[in-house]
Image 1 (cartoon, rainbow, N blue to C red):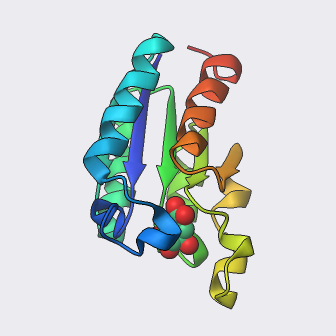
Image 2: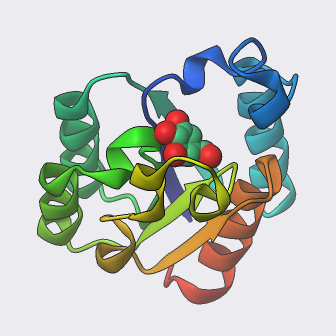
Length: 146
Ligand code: DQA
């Protein structure tokens, strides 16, 4: 099974970005963790991070063209308002698992209460830090056809 993992804006700053919310672990630590999880599940992964909406959309198209079986997507703040990413998820006809480190619905800002990508995604895992991604990988392994 081959899975594309896409991380959106500001996730490259993990570790220094609002550590009281996102913790002290860096983006490199997240990548290492994901490679270890994937290896233990016998899944192959490719990981990308972009701060740009159009690049995230291009990466979703790339997942289809390169025959990945699923996508794990943390679109970060774009999750709350990007209908273009919503349409891209619908367009590629691949299972997309929506993940968040935090639980945006429990955070103070009103704009985080809405996740427009949830309805286009097969499943959402949130609020468990790096573990949200691990749960998404395990879910793919169990539920997505290789
Ligand atoms: C996030 C939650 C979003 O609300 C926020 O804009 C992010 C990260 C998360 O992983 O918890 O940048 O997607």
